[in-house]
Amino acid sequence: MEAEPGMDALGLVALALIIVAFGAILLLTAGRGSARLRKGAAALATRRGWQAALVEETGGKARKLRLSGPGWRAETRRYVQGETGTSVFATEFEAPGVPWPGHVVIGPTLDGAEAALAARLTGGAAAMSLLTAGEMGPLVPRPEATGFGGTVFSSSESVPLPDATRLHPLLAAWRRDHPAERQFPIVILGPGGLRLRLRCDLWSVGEMERFADLGLSLAEVLETAG
Image (cartoon, rainbow, N blue to C red):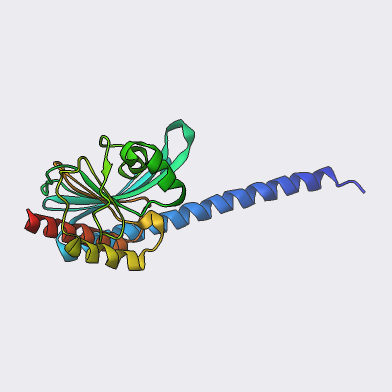
């Protein structure tokens, strides 16, 4: 038996109402999440004496949570990249006032396909470029650098390395609660200061506070070493 034309129209109207209602729920949920983040960031800023801000672009194409204090800043971000529509997630800490004589990168252990790629290319530059966002030139592996819990590269073999006995406990404490590979804290040292990078975003004020504290602890160790 064929459906009455009026029933088809009613079905389309019902479907449209369901879609509109679902969209409204998503917007309401996102709005409440943003309000919680702003409230939490404001409380953190008051408690720690930091600056905190949630930045959102119209349409949700980019979202950033920023923390900062004297001589440092931390930011987690999520955005859609150009025409590809690819979602990008990253979290970074920067302390420009903690320079290092040459570039040093401490990243996750390279194994499997990554190790094969690093072995085929000069100094593993392409593999480590993925970890450093391609911001520096060729890097050479430092296989003698043990105790960091990861792979160490530098801009030359003569670049001094930081003290693993002081850095590793800080990195290991983070890794115990963040075992995912994308949450591995990549340490980047150079004349421009200290950078700490995660290949993921952190949409929790508490997690961002802990990440900033990790960066500040690393900066303190490096300043003492200098």
